[in-house]
Amino acid sequence: MNNNVNSKEAFTLIEVMVAVMIVSVVILALIQMYANNIHVFLSLQKQTKTNQYSSFIIGSEQFGLENKSTSLDELVRDFDLHDDLRQKLKEIKVELLYTELDTIDLSESNSEDTSSDTQSASTIVLEVGRSILKTENASSSLLRLKIQ
Image (cartoon, rainbow, N blue to C red; front, side, top):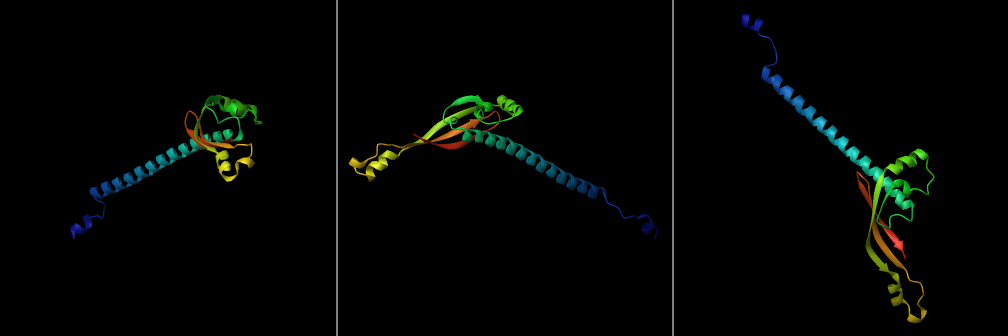
């Protein structure tokens, strides 16, 4: 009868240690997931900025078809922007790289379809190229079609 009075229900030391280990593994997994999400978010944020900068090339016909180092302000000189935004764009240096991928001469296909007497004097040549915009942190590329 004395044994029942002195014995109390309690966790053993091993049970407490196992519970602490399980909780610590769960916390470490949550911290790792948080760190991965932050890394992915920052990478997407950099790529989004670079894609926005690439839209400046699309908006300007004179850029993107040659190799050039410049600032983003030069790419948007025809746009109406606030002075503070224009100053920020002056600080961002970019490099434009253009690579010709293929040339398609449409006059050759016209000469096969029509007789030599009725050929038109106009010749159309399409040039397919890749424009790459490189910034300090990221790069973006787009395909260009140039009609000559």
